[in-house]
Image (tube, rainbow, N blue to C red; front, side):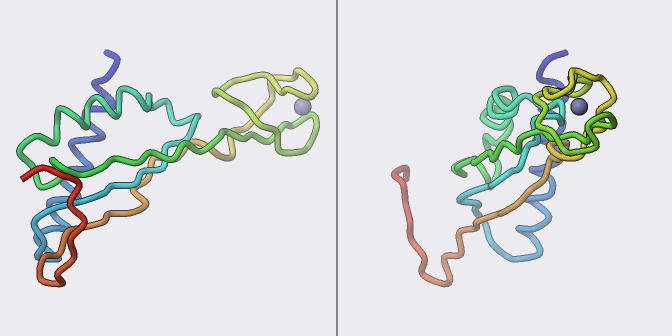
Length: 129
Ligand SMILES: [Zn+2]
């Protein structure tokens, strides 16, 4: 099952890119910036792998994929403060308690889409063609 989740996320992302492209009238995406939380359950390496295989033949084929990993944080009911956690259901690093509510790091978000707009005469070729 590993990777299937990430692949479906990448497919949704590419659909979004296609929609943006047809609306904006551009034909190529140079850079995609994603935020992936440490508690999102998404594997960054699987995400990169899925992206690499799914973008072939799409307008994002030559896009650089940047993934910003957001650290996980949770609210400890015992300490009554925000603590860093590296995975869901993790014990509190301060008191060892298990009553932690995740408050950050669960996101999966498209932050930035840098497009190639040839009409503006913008050229930042990184080889290819
Ligand atoms: Zn605690």
